Length: 328
Ligand code: TXA
Ligand code: MG
Image (cartoon, rainbow, N blue to C red; front, side, top):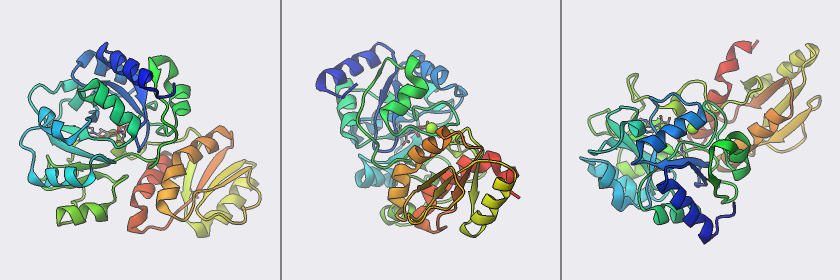
């Protein structure tokens, strides 16, 4: 429903009653529950079909609440909070006493984020506490960037969905972990805040994740995936890939980078755009459109492999990982 002041109050009441609420953030829509209520958090896992040992991010209205959920917060984390909150950054910090195991998946850290979306801000302000929320999609699927996406995928499980329009960033938050490298920042998931901006604020580039980094479903190799077989293909290999699939009688949908003349022979052709933030904004919407087109194969043209495209390329690799073995 439209996020009127009455709807926000109703959503906050539902959270207090242990129910699930869908709400917009500037990255993607979240499926929220009272983070202090283990029973309410358990309902998130049931609704998503997500394994119960996966941790969820706790969303806070303000950085001032950081010490309610975390302890021994390193100065560098406070610096990132000042720079990037409210915004598309999640930090994994040593969990505070009393944080339910249901939230952390039993891990030593708790994920915290202060989202910037005005509807999220109003909801968190009205509720007062922390809201545990993963992206509001079925486990392993494409994250929702509109209220309609949430309703179509999780409608029955959610008591209320606050509609705040299409998400601005379009892909999930950047996740920085402070619990695994002696207090140094580790980039677990690239996202809305880019690595160069993090390096500026930290004074050093964030470290790459080690093999034993905390488990994060958004860091599984296959994730964010359409149901249609989907391949990530270098620009130079697109034509042969189309020829091969067409010869095999398969229908094709394609996500190109640059707008311009559509590639002939395709059932559906979309362009993501040459600006990585514009591409990110439309990425999940495009993947849903291609998935709904009932083609046999989705081809995604590989964007440039430069740092500015890191978060987009990460999501594209995960969206296509399952189907890699189909490559010629
Ligand atoms: O932009 C976003 O981050 C969105 C919006 C709704 O805030 N949320 C989101 O949540 O993408 P989710 O659960 O789909 O992905 C969050 C990732 C998961 O891979 C989870 O495993 C990881 O963050 N994570 C959360 N808490 C963690 C913790 N305590 N330790 C390690 N990883 C954690
Ligand atoms: Mg997710």
